Length: 233
Image (cartoon, rainbow, N blue to C red; front, side, top):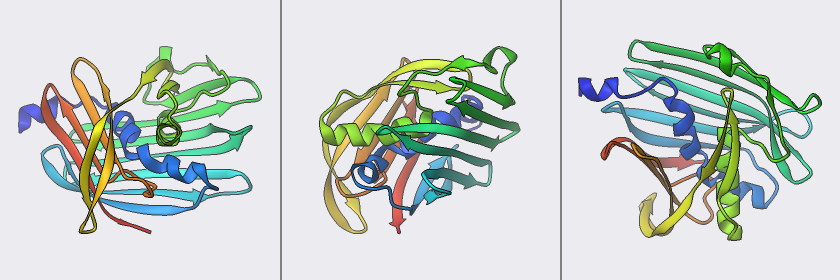
């Protein structure tokens, strides 16, 4: 298990968050509604708990947050965003992580008036920005809101992510259907996946749920993280 621990880079929370928000797009099909979702999790080889919330702030602003904790890791990230001309726009974000002996703290500002994004904290100088923004750019959390929304609409799951000083195209694909159990009831879910050479991430999205019913990450073919929903309110 110790060797597996060493395989986790400190940027892991951003990838995880891409999964944890996958199904919240159902909330976007209708007016956004606050929610709190709790997960039973396995992370770094140990049991963990996960908590994800969507809360309204002033006016058209919302705060989307995630926390995952166990005895060896404490991960949290939040994004403040608004809706502008039918698109979700990140305004600011914070990323905090303590995993084993590693620590990370990064803050981001998305200035749409100036048309640029910048980062401070534990980020390399060359990744502090500014990075020029384009209409439709999102950070990791908001892309995942779009994934579920666009999945329901039958649109291509292709996006441009601006996160920690980098611009990356992201492509998700539907890989099939599978039954999952939600609070003792079997429901059909759509499996959505994103793969790289070393990592595979899968989410099971159940119609009507504003969060994924199940999430699985594999690294080098080995399951490294899994979350299963326990409650939603």
